[in-house]
Length: 102
Image (cartoon, rainbow, N blue to C red; front, top):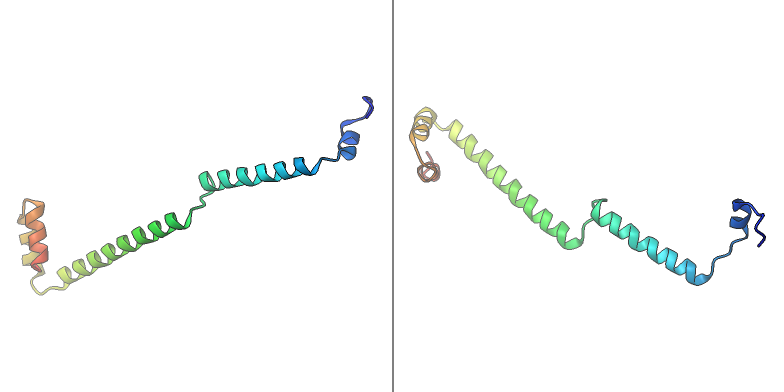
């Protein structure tokens, strides 16, 4: 290889060995996985399972809360229940009032 060749001529003549190809591909795979799991939003099966369980629990809680509010609003004595609820001073009293159906 003469020193008077241009970079493009040197690139065209370059033939990497199989070892260099292997390590280049292995490095690219590792780099892709690192970038994918850190910045790309990839998740493992375990993480995805935990995320699904958490999402299902939140959805159930939201559904139950909506049903409870709907039951509270449509009750025949909703005004009395609302006044009673506003009169409670602690979370414990509010919770016991809510579980009692009022």
